Image 1 (cartoon, helix red, strand yellow):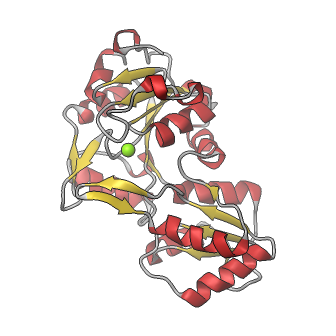
Image 2 (cartoon, rainbow, N blue to C red; image 1 turned 90 degrees about the vertical axis):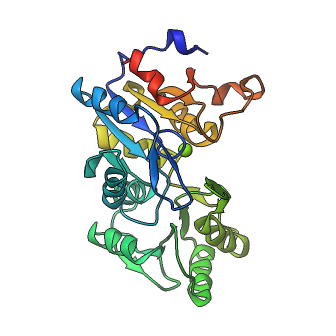
Image 3 (cartoon, rainbow, N blue to C red; image 1 turned 60 degrees about the horizontal axis):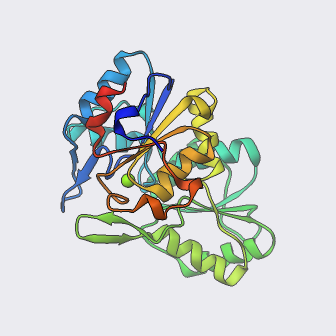
Length: 273
Ligand SMILES: [Mg+2]
């Protein structure tokens, strides 16, 4: 493991940033407050001719909408510079299950996004896959039909399967994880994650950058999500101590989760780009 002094990112051809705890912190109003000099870091990467993407595990609204609200909050990001589990799910379904009917749990805007991407949607027990993202309400009869579909062999995909994420007032529980767990419990299906960290997410990065993921650097505050994602794809990994894994003792972390470098804040990247 390297320390800040030996961090070199000049070889990286593309950059993958986590959002919350890495580039921004959120207030009680859920508005993003950019970390000091985060805007400068992104700008310097763009000016060097290299591409960057923000990969967040939020799946309640389309990536484009996340890009616009971050821009409104003072972190200018282009529409095509944000990825979410919804985007990696679409890419995964197109590549691995083209034309298959998907039983979807999501918000209305995400249903529209997935339908517009040409993914056939189903709502009966004959669905061939079940995909769970963030949902604002739940129909128990639909939950039952989806569980029957999984019992009949449908694969169970989920955007994220961690219990929750850190909010301004403590942990925000993952509704997607709750729905996924309910289906898994009664169907015996094993949830397959398509957001961070997963093979589907690595595939999404490869598709997005049109580069081998070994040429990318992944920067984030969460060992289990961001660093794991980077390690899965053989990317260079940088742990930022400004969020979830800020206090973690790296000596107690297994080798497969060790980052290549550790920094206090993204501003420390400015010397390494
Ligand atoms: Mg984070």
